[in-house]
View 1 (tube, rainbow, N blue to C red):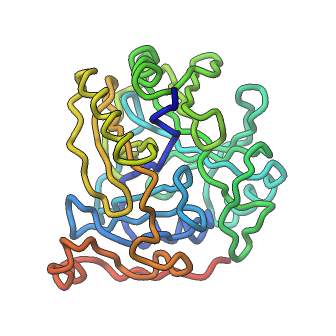
View 2 (cartoon, rainbow, N blue to C red):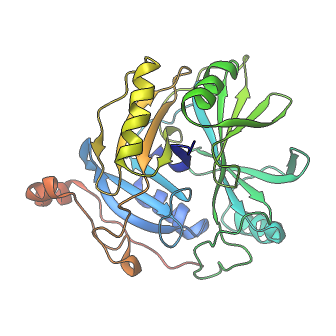
Length: 315
């Protein structure tokens, strides 16, 4: 039977200052700003999307930046780390780049005996990692100092902390088409598609404090499904599980349902299309403030409430 869930679609986090967020993810990490829009549930707040050249699912990290938002706390019941995949031979490049911009990082560590990872945090404290591998054949965004030998290709995995892995793992395997594919100490790895960009790691951290939402924390994790037909089937399964999903919501670039998994992390299931070129040419993604049709009548008020953002040249 064909799987309804195809892997990870995107990760959405909370941030503080929007310009600092833009500078970090485009200027330091070299991701492409693929969409500048607003939070559809709070339309005087930006929703910034970053990813590869086309904004392919599995590469997209998005933010709701709230100026002055109090910093959150990593902990149980939260997705605490998002890991990007980069070429194996780019360790020296990335260590030098993080040093160049004053980003503190941990020395490279080995995971699952084969994965070399570096942990760091953005200016808001969001947990990030780079994994160095040559198994990932996706193409990153090439601009400035970034090319085939060092550019971020997309996600590798996300990391959720819980008391134990059983309840969330059960949801992933029984209702969301995942399989347990690896485990090491307190880390349990699940995947719907056993390839880089689609791994969900659950860490058993019973002694950790519970996480607190705020800047530098993840708002939700979105899984990818093909279309609204498969999305409706997933929604029916989630209803059967008793997790009270939302109705299907139009997010302009995809449609979505949301629900909280047993450990408290907000999950989304988003369709693969129509994609980010629906209202902007692929060569000019992220250049203008894009609003869904139902917000256009409020454009003047919305634009006045938003700060002016400047996309600076890569160094």
